[in-house]
Amino acid sequence: MPYLPNLASPREDLYKKSVDTLIEETERCSELGIRYIVTHIGSHVGAGAESGKTRLLQALGRAVDEDDPMILLENGSGSGSHMGSRFGDIAEFINELGSTRVGFCLDTCHALAAGYDIATKDGLAQTLREIRKTIGFSRLRLVHLNDSVGDLGSGIDHHEHIGLGRIGCEGFHRILTSQLAKRPMIMETPVDDRRSDAENMDKVRELVGLSTR
Image (cartoon, rainbow, N blue to C red; front, side, top):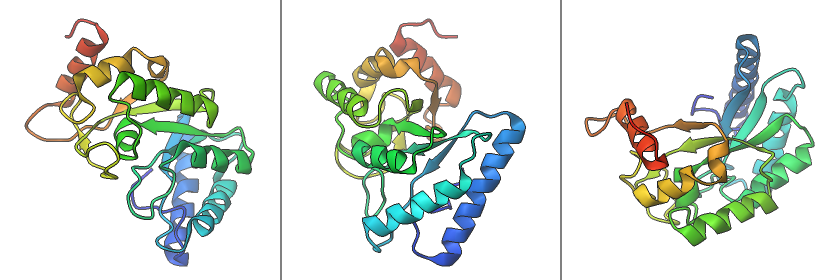
């Protein structure tokens, strides 16, 4: 999904465009045989969490179809009025919608920024327990593998190269050898001169214990 849509927006014009975009993207994925489409949950922009939740559920209700790809809700970083930074909230959205075609995408940068200490052994174990207790691992279908520029609980959504941020190499080694590694992973790392996408992939392979290219 593009970054522009806001499925929780109180603004009618933006909300309509957001829902229309989600429907178009799911239809496009269906035609291409793509299994999942990931969307940010959005921001209530000061209208309140309940208002944002109502808007979100209405949007998903219009877009979800049993023949279309599964829509995966991505956890947020906890900044401002953005929704979905807590796993319990995402579980509530999915349960209230009552569709098997809505699941969960875990973003590691967002999780750390929202206060889930996935960089440490105990913190990762606690985070996995919370996912299991709230959303459930059966609904976790994809992991966005990103390091974080911002500190734990900072609310800063700023991705970093694998191992160069606050999660670090030891943190990613634990992540890559945990239950999370049973799910497909996609990197959303920066585009700059410090490291290429291929070099980030080499780092992932190194941290998981595989030989690099």
